[in-house]
Amino acid sequence: MSTAAAHMASYAHSRRENLLLMPHGSQAMEPIAPCHDPFFTDLSQRENTGPGRLLGSETLERLLEGDQQTSSMLEWWKKTNGLETVRDFVRNYRDHPAGWGALLMIHGIPEVTGRLRNKVENFAIYSALFLACAVAAIAAPPDAIVSCAGGIECEVRKRIFFYFLIVAIVSLMLCIALAMAFGNALNEAARDCDVLRMFSPAGQGFMATRKCEIAYQTGIASTFVAMLAPVQSHMGYEALIFTLLAVSVAAYIYLSTARPLFASASIVEYWKSGIGGSQDPYDLDALVECFEQQASGSQEIKANFTNLTTAAAAPQANFTNLGTAAAAASRYQDCGQWRCGQARASSSSGESSSGESFGQIDDALVSSSNHRMLQRHSP
Image (cartoon, rainbow, N blue to C red; front, side):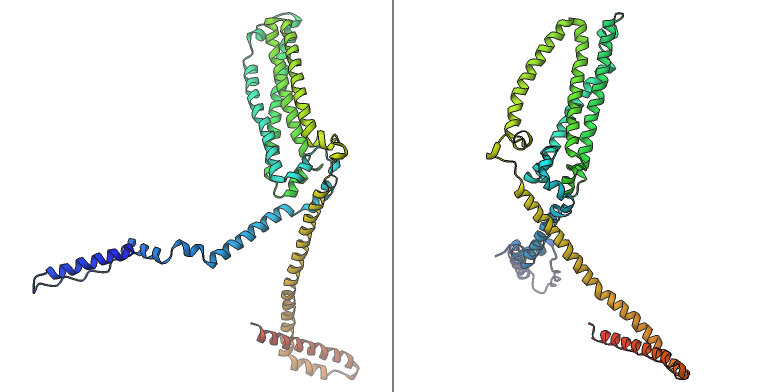
């Protein structure tokens, strides 16, 4: 027994007991109005329409199928629309300035754009860190730079400190600005073809990331050189010699580690440069064929949609022209008697012009009759 039925049975039982206990001849109790408690109403509705009925209904299945088709169509349109505009760039993948265009074809737009965002954002974040240090140093320079007086060495030290800090601040701010410009442009790319065009010679997306990297490296190097000026004032040239040795060791460790990484995995350093030889040639013809198929499919859909739109608009234009002819015919019909009388009253030398007038009237009347027949049989 359901919960609602149990409550109703309990209420009926208590009502019957109250009637039996009433004294004989006493006034009967007024009938109690039916219960409209939302709890019982909602409970009964829940019993009649359970969640299983919704999940198994044909309406829900039809809606889900339509929604899935709509999502698939939107995804397909985003991937294929406008691909014919970057066809030459994709075909000439061997002439790309770097491997980002090929990476877009291999891994897809979302994967590669995520990598690029991570790259430029890291440059911007670390540039902001070193920019804060450079601004603090130039706003409050050390006493070894400010208090230095006299001598060519002191003047050179001052200029090295301030000039290189200025270059560092400008370079780091440029790095942040380039990273923001790259991210904003990528955010406004609506379709896959727009991202491909961004890395073509028209957009030069690769050069944007490269300039961001160079600006970051320049800012870091300039900050490091500026910091050497106060160190030299305290330690002399001994500090400079030690710094040179430390930088040489660090550069050797970096190059000996980074070069094998890029030479064994980079699409430019390894694959495109031909290190793999004939066993691993740089061949993306299969991807180009897939691209051509997508571009051709998009163009075919556009052509078919244009034809359908033109065909759908043609009956409406014909009906408009027919309505214009019918209106003209009705005007002819209203004053037809007068026109016919005028035509018959013409001279014999004007028979040819009279015949043309009668022909125009007949054509208009036929058009009017056709228009009325269409209106009579139209739904």
